[in-house]
Amino acid sequence: MIRLMGIDPGLRFMGWGIIDVDGNHLKHVASGVIGTDGSESVPLRLCELHGALKKLIREYAPAEAAVEETYVNRNGSSTLKLGYARGVALLTPAYEGLPVAEYGAMTVKKSVVGTGSASKEQVTMMVKRLLPGAEIRKADASDALAVAICHAHHRASAAHVVAGKRMA
Image (cartoon, rainbow, N blue to C red; front, top):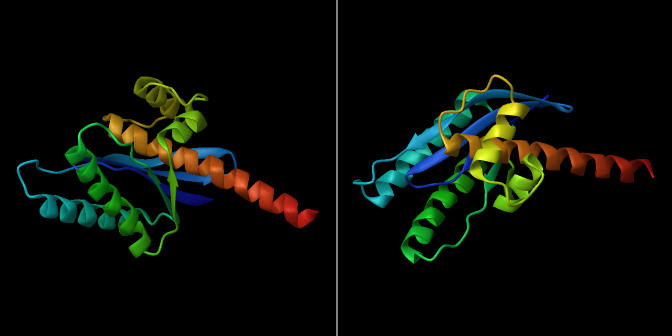
């Protein structure tokens, strides 16, 4: 069994999700959203995100983390701020000694729903199906769990390929 953490970066709301993976069996451990106050300075908000992520990593002890890649939108300022939050999402688990994988939104959607153009509602529905009993209150938490599920699928495929090469 391995414990994985998925992170959906955001400066206002950063989603996080922890799952246990045992072969093909996925189990929801915990999930939620780290919120920051938009009236605070960006550096203080980044510190809040870092501190909260560090606390979660130490509490739940995941073995690996995965972070969703960001997309570029028309508002350069928003994209830059999202990039700052993504930096925290990448740095914090790496600093805590975890390997960190990155997946694009389309890859996450395709891994969880079967199509890269899935809506947020479709992703949430499939996350709930794949993780029975998970109570998901915010879309950001659902997205983070989807990132963790995507990582579980990709690491299983990579292990299968590596195992296949070793046998050959």
